[in-house]
Length: 222
Image (cartoon, rainbow, N blue to C red; front, side):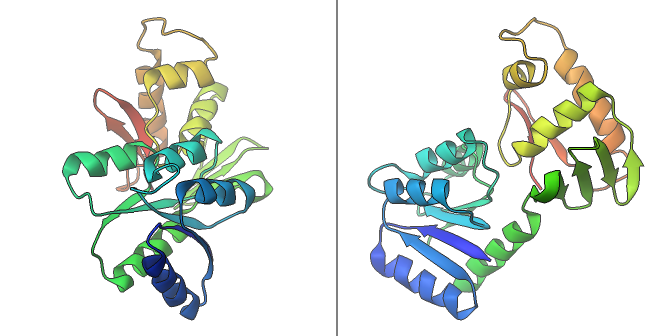
């Protein structure tokens, strides 16, 4: 598993890098947000671990840059900022997990492994999240091995949500990218189609993939 660690405290970064390498992880280090951003955009990583308060650009900006490029690489955010508001802000910027300092190294490793297992796999035009399998080319969807028939619009909505996994998308985002309308027509069409998807994707599973962030939008977290 290839890991990028973005941490401005060089001693901390070196310690984390050494510990992960001893566990046979392939690790790159960056000591500021700008370098981290360059590495994230130029190399393929299984997981990115980033501090939030850093020179250059901070972890929040780095996370947003990665998501704005359409990249689904799992991101673990590290910070001494442990208020509920800070954690929510970090996750809503596109982070997949948030670990407050100080932390135990074994917990960091466990979280990295968990994110690696949950990573969306786009190889060969296929997307996998847990037991949900999506074939972009054939437009086929299966969950727990059972085929799910979707209309073309339902499929486009699911694909958009999945490609933005871990990131809250607003109703306006969905209308623009799925219906290709540059303004909110003031209808409940998004809510209706989200409900259609939930009935087909989540109805027979205890693990509900499509989550609502009330007043904000929708997110697939797994």
